[in-house]
Length: 431
Image 1 (cartoon, rainbow, N blue to C red):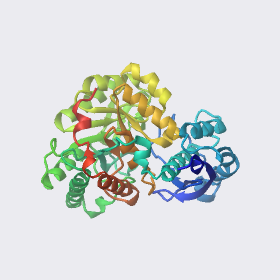
Image 2 (tube, rainbow, N blue to C red):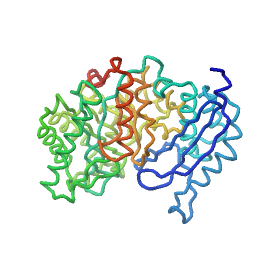
Image 3 (cartoon, one colour):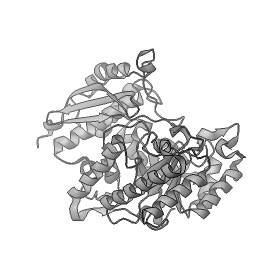
Image 4 (cartoon, helix red, strand yellow):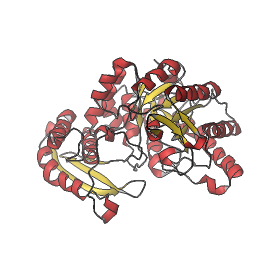
């Protein structure tokens, strides 16, 4: 194919709705040969160092409109990108960063740059006639990620008194991605029936990420529900399924203390670590995300020292997918794993650099959705491309979550016998 086919000939934006019914940015990048479309997601539990979204303010859309973001695509971004080679992702993204000119993407908006950056990669892949995972990851990209499924919601994602934000099931005992989804779906259905039986049908309403939000206040009660559902579905906790927690501890860190209001606890750093140690000793928990506040580096160090041989200790708000922050933190030994969300940093190139730095340091990378997500399945392809073997994209419910799972089913089918399901592999040797 002639190189001119990859030349960017048009960039435009449209408003779109995320899974909360709030406006977000859809970007369309056209080359001479194809087009790419991407939609930026939006988070609820956000780190203080994330790229910021550009919103209109005012009364329309409750202040969340994206008219200004769309106008910046038309008047600022499009003139600068037209004529560039879409395959040169680093140049496209460095152009966006230079046009923005701020440390947190506040002029163009992280929502704007994310959508344009990803749309460009999709346009280049389509022009090349390659699936996105293969375009980004090369011909060796064949690992289907083990899904981390948030099936009980608390914290900022729910209206119950549960302080920790997410409780996950992880189908490690499957032999394929499709089998993992079947197993998880069966557990999810049994979890629904157990919750309805114990707390009433009204307790089976789902939160932002498809997880249930039953009226429980103690972490152990939530974990007991997961164990009961796994066993009811005929599986073995610790073998067929592992468990995971996203504490999102910045959300309950106040005045130097960790306040678990639902459990009536006010803990210092060592007290919270002891709390986690108790949970990990009593349940097959292999994933612990943001166990301490994003500014409590000593807490992360202690958690990794104490629990890192048993579980992935994961930084999300801690790193905000920022390669500079990660590079500074790695010598401190804060975590053995890092979450990756492209819209936290605002461009695909920066997110890929973050993944590269983490991988070189022996950190496992988890590609993640946002709580306000969309039907764009981009992160499914990205997870396969990066090959770290983990994806976090919610319960097996709600279209913005299942779109990612459905895309992974397609990828597994396309790869055929070359496909390899990660399964237990990402949890075997935490660093």
